[in-house]
Image (cartoon, rainbow, N blue to C red; front, side):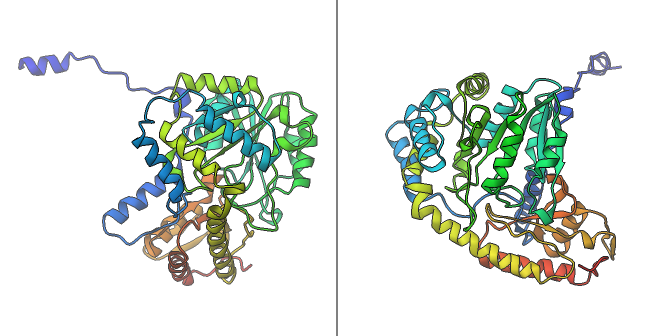
Amino acid sequence: MSKAESSSSNQVKVDISLSPRVNSVKPSKTVAITDHATALAQAGVPVIRLAAGEPDFDTPAIIAEAGINAIREGYTRYSPNAGTLELRTAICHKLKEENGISYTPDQIVVSNGAKQSILQAVLAVCSPGDEVIIPAPYWVSYPEMARLADATPVILPTLISDNFLLDPELLESNITEKSRLLILCSPSNPTGSVYPKKLLEKIAEIVAKNPRLLVLSDEIYEHIIYAPATHTSFASLPGMWERTLTVNGFSKAFAMTGWRLGYIAGPKNFIAACNKIQSQSTSGASSIAQKAGVAALGLGYAGGEVVSSMVKAFRERRDFLVKSFGELEGVKISEPQGAFYLFIDFSSYYGLEVEGFGKIENSESLCRYLLDEGQVALVPGDAFGDDSCIRISYAASLTTLQASFERIKKALISLRPAVPV
């Protein structure tokens, strides 16, 4: 035996095990599908990608210029952990004027995207064994964030016939002494549903009866909303300011996904805890992105004309898709009132055998079929807690959406719905 072989045989094996906390977390299906579709496109396959939750618009020029000027003017050093005073002051002004909720700069933490803000909030307020109540369909990361905090996600289903809105009675019947956090997202990802103020008031009455229960209100899509629907911040309701953590950001309304900039607002003791977590993880958000954020908030009420023109385009796309898919056999739709997603029930196609593909058993296999046969990348509903549906992002040009609909229609045309609707 050679010396190298002897050394190899005596080598101690490295322990490659991972922590139970990480093993309990599922990878993001939206990220996985987007990456797969991107790889196909790079390989020359003409895939239409409607999986990612990302506006197709460029960042508005005035915002981009603010970022460029920040670089040119040497504004490139570490920023304060909680965010620059300039941006936090601008956020306070925005929340007061647009949302009717008052904060001081020390009640705001700016992070590298709203996703980080949400995770830090969950880590800050949840103890092992606590329950996090999450209406389904939900954004894919909510349950996994609860698991990262050693908390238990409690999923409450909603119905397409109720526009995927949480039933207050169902909420009340599922609150226990372990209930710590209720996560609400309005306008919703993945459904586009918007919670009416009266329904939020009913939910607030239930929350008020439970001293331990806090609310995380994810309002990242607030400006992408279609009249007559209107946005209500949960913290603005009577008695809810003290127990609400409001999360928002710049990615969706201002087409700033790559700038990575979000924030959380709430009572000082909770926000200080979020700030502490951030100080030992990423520290402050990009100084350049924060200058751009100040410019975004300076565009006027709800982003002014710049944002309203994008919302107008989203609405046109929504209307086209709702009308087109509504004409397909075996499809159920809840018309979205905000965001830029359709969450469509295709379950009547489940159980069908497809020659050369196999059986369409669920939302995941149907998405694989539509990717293989129609070359359109969508996200299966099981990623959002509702396997009967598929999420379609209409953050793409109308021409692209028209082409994608024709591809999907062609792929489905040979399939006969098991249960006519």
